[in-house]
Length: 101
Image 1 (cartoon, rainbow, N blue to C red):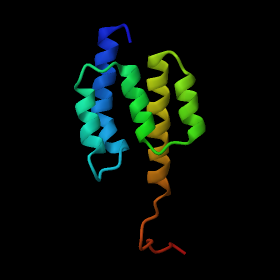
Image 2: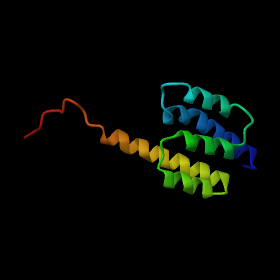
Image 3: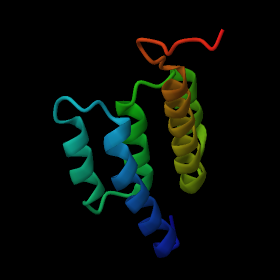
Image 4: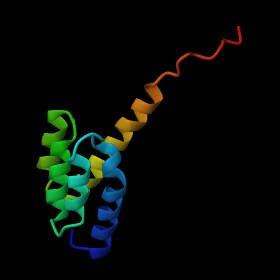
């Protein structure tokens, strides 16, 4: 990412959201946060994050085929956020509330 401001915004976004995307158990999230604070290029960080996440292989391949790093980051971000929203919506409350019937 050539624009320093855009790169910093993406690093901040990944620092905030990646720990919620990655499995909480183990060292994966903490190690990734350390990587985010390093000078590793955003393209490499995106690729590492996509590798670490339990994503469909076809989607991972589409990310790797995208040469523009900002587009790759945006696609990964949008996909994971949408997947998490769907997962939260599908979780049913137990016990269910009484029906108005």
